[in-house]
Length: 235
Figure 1 (cartoon, one colour):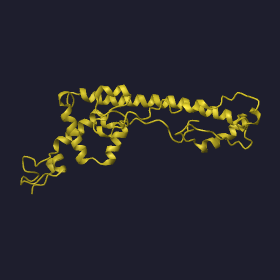
Figure 2 (spheres, one colour; figure 1 turned 30 degrees about the vertical axis):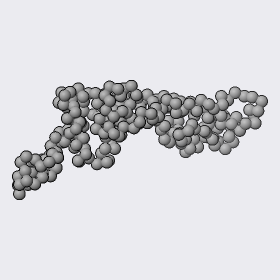
Figure 3 (cartoon, helix red, strand yellow; figure 1 turned 60 degrees about the horizontal axis):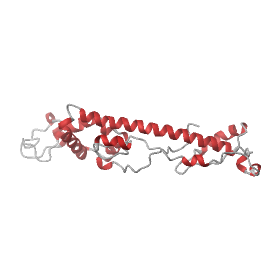
Figure 4 (tube, one colour; figure 1 turned 45 degrees about the horizontal axis):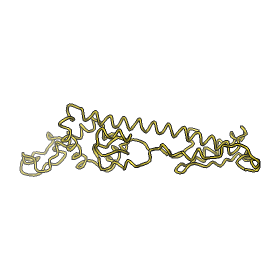
């Protein structure tokens, strides 16, 4: 049953996928981490928190018998071992897995209703586990941001300049794929990622460098020359 669902209904906290811009400690109130390097990419905190996604699972019939229970197909063991299960909105069943388990359900004498109850219970358990994992990861990502703010080299009074330099490096050198990765993984909040991007950003000048560029003749230095000045051409 571990692959009952072909698509998880719970958000993966890479992310910085949910959160509030750069609100510091306030992020903990919503349970989602902030996104330091890309504050504008933080989605609305009104998004799905996974807590009520599977409330519909509890709405299925309890399976208690009544006068018409024997006539209800749900109370029969499918002769062909094929079970039809209903999932809550937003969840897709792994039909291949259900078809594979069908003969086992049949051998156990499970009715379609009983198989449905097992599925509902599975979704309920997975829902709690997914929510707990999501909250734990969000806490870790936010912890990285808090650690970076306290860092002697890049945090404290240097924090605003650090973030500005890191964002400048990503703006000039980063790609959409890198941006997506840092947001999805939460890596954009890691102190070491912020540190290295800030160092690169400090090497990038918006105007011509004071020495006149790579060749000293007034030309603007290429980014590669700023990062590796010893390799800059002489002419």
